[in-house]
Image 1 (cartoon, rainbow, N blue to C red):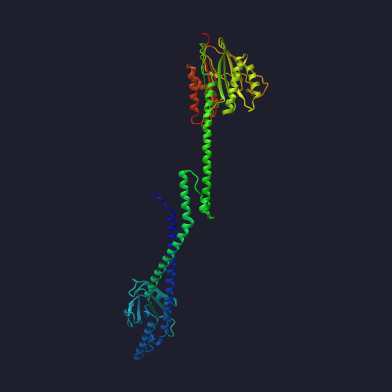
Image 2 (image 1 turned 90 degrees about the horizontal axis):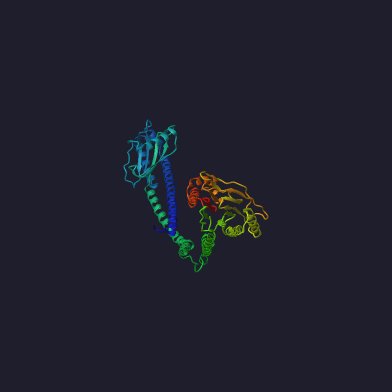
Length: 535
C-alpha cells in the first residue's frame, strides 16, 4: 500500500480550490462582460434606429409624394441611411411592413447595408417570409401591443447573416393611430465574440500566473510552518515506536511555534516521557509480581504440604479429602488424624477472607486445633480453647468456621461440634444423602469466652459421610446462580457404590460443569468417609 504524502494532498486541495475559484471568476466575469457588451450593442442599435426614423418623410410611406420627387426623396433617404450605417457600424437598416393577418410575411420598403459588408440587400417592394417565430412574435408585440422596442439576438449558425443583434422600433405615418411600419437596425456581433475570446484568454493567463505565484509562496510557507514540523514529529514517533528510548533532544527544542503544531510536538515529548516512565514502572511491577508469584507458589506448596497426605490404613473406614484453592493460597483446610488407636479426628474449616492473610490464619488455626485435639477432650471443649487462643492474637479480626468430629472407630459413634460451618451430608446404608442438621455455634475467633455446643450421631456399617466448605454450595455460574445444597445432594446420589476418591472426583466435576467459564469465587474443600465397622 502506497504511503500518502500530506504535503501533496494539501497542495492538491489548495490547487483545486484556487482552480475552482478561478473558473468561477472567469465564468462570472465572462457572463457580466457579455451582458454589458450586448447591452451596449442594443443601445447603439436603438439609437441608430431612432436616428434613422427621424430621417423618414411620412409622405413617402402614405403615397403623398409620387413621380420624380418620390424617386429623389427615396434616394436621399437611402443615401442618408447608408451614411448612418457606415458611421454607426450598422450592418443593415431596413424598413418593413408586416402582414398583420398572421405576421408570416414582410414587405420591404427600403433596405440599406454597410459598405464593408457583402450581403444581399432587398429591393423596395420585396416580400419575404418571416424568418422565425421569434421575429413573428416581435412584430405582433410592436403592432398590436404597443411595444416601443424589440430586440432579437441571433447566434452564429442560426442565421445566414451570422451572429448579430436586431433592434426594432415602430414607425407611424402622420395622422395614423396604428403601427404599419417597423424600422429594423442589425449589427454584427463578431467583434463581441473576438472580445469574449480575448477576455477568456487574458483571464486564464492571469489566473494561471496568480495561481503559480500563490502556489510557490504558499508552498514555501506550508513547508516551513506545517510540512517540515509534521515530518519531524512523524519521524520521531516512528523512531520511538521502534527503539523505545529517550530522544537526543526533545521535539520542543526544534519546533517552538505557539500553535497546534507546537502543541503537538510538546505533547509528543510529554507522551514519550510518560510512556518511558510507565514502561519502567511496568517492568519493575512485573519483576515484583513475578517474585511475589514465585513466593506465592512456594507458600502454596508449603500449605499443601501441611495438609495430611497419608490416609489411615484401617479396615473400619475409608476416607479421602481434597482442596481446590481460588487463589494461589487457600483459607480452607482439612485435617484427619488418629487421636488414639480407637478415635479418629475429622476437621474441615474455612477462614474468612482470601489470600495471604487467610492462609496465615488457616495455618495457625490448623496447628492449634490439631494440637489441642491430641490433648484430649470433647469437640466443644477443644474449640473453646482454640477460640481463646486465636482471640488473643487476632489483630486482623479474622474468624474461621469449623466442623470438628471425633469418630469412635469401634462403635461408629461420632461426637461433633459445628462452629458456623455447613451441615455435613450423610447417607445411611441403602438410603439417600441428606443434610445432617444439628445445633450450631458461632464461628471460632469471633469473640472471647464463647461456649460451643456439640452433637452426637452413630455411623453404621455402610454409612457415608460428606463434609465440605461453603465454596461447594455457593459456587456460582455465569448466570449468577448458586450451585446450592440441592444440586449437591443430587450429585452425591449418583455416587452410590463408588470409592471415597471417586465420590470427590464426581463432586468436583459436577461443580465445575455447573460454573462453566465463570471464575472460581471461593476455595472449595471436601472430605468423604465410608464407615465399614469391625466386620
